[in-house]
View 1: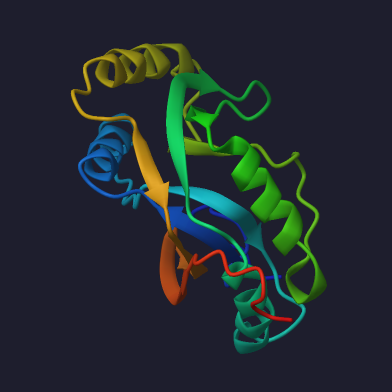
View 2: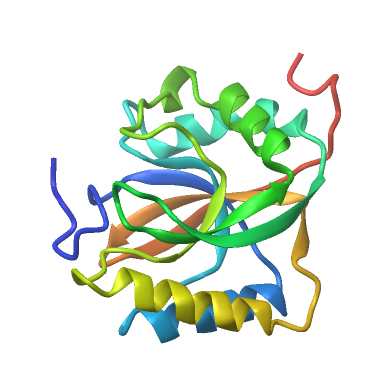
Length: 188
């Protein structure tokens, strides 16, 4: 398995994400750049965490298409700045919409895209990771202060998701966009 030289995981791993629109998305991208020098973010919430595929990307896309056609749009409301204790990843939690994200993850994480991750699925928005020792508390406090001052709504609508591929150096390429239409007859 080829590893990304910058530590982002396996090269050519794949994920399913919902991008966060502006002004919230821009704020989160700016916050992440402020906390992690050289970061090139695109604010999102992950539905299927990065994984290697046992098939070619077009087959994975066709597997996901009918499943995603059944998913209805929903709102995500963001919570507080938190830290995962084992990995020291600083993130913003999901206060509402987590059940829907879990449901999507569980419904989609099978077949040709099935993958078992090290940690249980936990909906969140990453704002800083792979941090130098001793910097987490200070960066967390800085993130909390900036998050508290954010003057716009802390929610967004998930009405589409993207199937993406890691191309190295924490860079992700959009391969396919899926509209969530909530048609329970789709794919039958």
